[in-house]
Image 1 (tube, rainbow, N blue to C red):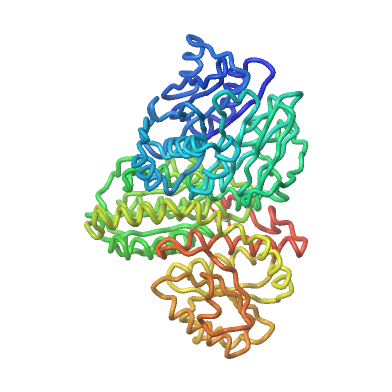
Image 2 (cartoon, protein in one colour):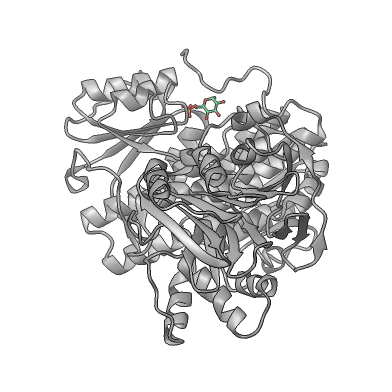
Length: 608
Ligand code: G6P
């Protein structure tokens, strides 16, 4: 996750850009950089490390331009260094970028084939060269950006300035956040409203897929189909930005929509995306090869992340996994062999039962790996090694982005375990890492079904009971779907392994019972489809979440469906979380429930 900023000012903007970057440094500080126009010419200053290094550089070699873009980097592609620092530039355009360009490898090869020389290892540089190519073909800057955007896959935000164009700043958003700010004859662009707080309190947010053309007198927005659109200006409260809902009604909605970005950020911490390998940011105090059994303990949604990971560790690393909710784990007195590994998963890092499980396992002589979102938490402090989820603060009580970030970390760890244990080859590792790299973009795509889901939620809000079904990793997701729905809408819901349907819950099926089937095209797809037919034959109200045409393939004509993007199956649970969360969110909202603070629940449970 990086921070980007852009300013069209009335005087020299370099110090304003730096001020703004200071507010974005929480997003990354591997390097920082700025580009302006000096006498109409693109000029850059960049420095490795924290922003103060860039400031020192600017003190020695000041910039006077009245237009500028700036960047603070969280390295994904290519090591932290000056030559990989943003902005990336050609003689025509400079660009700053947050997020991942998934298809950068093929674009880079294509451009190299056309004679382009690359100056960095980043995915970003392909964007500068694509825009340049279109400009050399005769397109104006705005059309060149529009054409280049169509070549890019992934979840990202971008900011551009152009050689000789003193009054033009272009921004684009797909998956990662981007806001613009209105000043007195000045205009601003930034990763969040916090970055723009020193300059203005009048903000407009780009919607997903939007791009924006800015001059000093205003901004024109375009949607993903290049149609001109209106995005409302709104007043923000500068002081409250860190816990601001952006343009969402609830923190939960904001956190659901942050997922493409925070998943990308989390994955970047665990993967070397250029090499297509897992690269853990810490040394392991144990050898995965020597571990005979992995025990996992957690509560609530974090437990369901662990249950999903059981499938990955067992399948990819052939490592047996024992998992239990922490309140049982701590009292079962189960034998745990010294030298084996216990993994605890917790957003807050403070959950009492999870902490007690950790201490029990430690007393048994086990090594402790924790997956937590709060690095200073008790669980983090008491663990042998901490795998951080970089979800940022989660305010909504019902966990969303922390869950998908936990899944992302666990997926990377399962691949690492597979490599260490020799159960996956280098080629398989590359393929799995590439599948993971597509996840942020696929989540962004899945979130586009929000409007359809809102419609479906209106129906669902009338139900008394709801059944969720899934097989394989979709089984824990069925449990999570039911948990999310009951937590915030108070509708009774149950998750079941689809194959277990005929051993009980099938007795409940009648026309008034909605049955939600999670059916990605995976190893169990055909079998799930058979279970769907069993429901349909008994008149159940079906909602299918799966690839296009799933209801047709199952030969069912009266089912509703939420169509999901095509994807490789291994990590589908991360992508399929998006519709599950939106369904619960909109159902609760339609019912007028307190979505962010549901009754009787707490965000951090520090009692047994
Ligand atoms: C509470 C929260 C859940 C969360 C669970 C575990 O029940 O409402 O959203 O999943 O605690 O919390 P933790 O902080 O350990 O992940």
